[in-house]
Image (tube, rainbow, N blue to C red; front, top):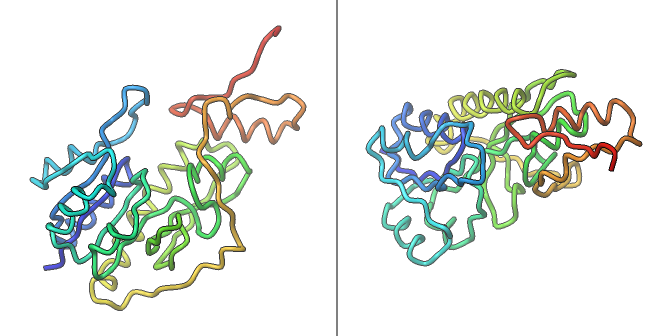
Amino acid sequence: MTRAVVFAYHNVGVRCLKVLLAHGVEVSLVITHADSAAETIWFGSVAATAVEYDIPVITPDDPNADGVVARIAGAAPDFAFSFYYRKMLRAPLLATAPRGALNMHGSLLPKYRGRAPVNWAVLHGERETGATLHYMTEKPDNGDVVAQTAVPILPDDTAQEVFDKVTVAAELILDRVLPALLAGTAPRVRQVLEEGAYFGGRTPEDGRIDWQKDAATIHNLVRAVAPPYPGALTAVGG
């Protein structure tokens, strides 16, 4: 039986963890995040899902710490998977999975590498985005692509609505390609990084409306930061 360790958070983490289990992968350890009191938790719990399936789960502050890497190595994984886990995984950790370490990213790589890819895509008025399964390296979101699936972004879609579509796309990708991945026959396509760009994280202040912008740009901003994200903001009489 193929064994894996899973780094996961959010709805994508829940759904993709369940796909692995449905395909008979032995998940020997789940690494996730402790929920933050400063964040609105509107998504499913990977930790609760792991407990439901009697899988050991840990929430380290630093997944690359020596003790954590040793525990992961002790779980003897064939593969490591990252599904919306929020911290970078370094080379010693990636090396614990001899058959590969793979990440599910919420864009059509190489576009929108980095943080908050769905929000950035909506902000920029894109008409489609998607999910991509790719091999991990120490550089974010730049490894070889295994598979990707596109989803439409409608003119009035909010970021959450698009994220829900991306979650389904991620589940479909993993379900479709996992048999070939386990058999060692899945494709690997090198990214042409020049065809995309890296984007950083976003803060609530990034939702401030610039009324000098055109109506379409403001509309896209409002959609990109609509609840459950912090929302757009402006000053009145200030």
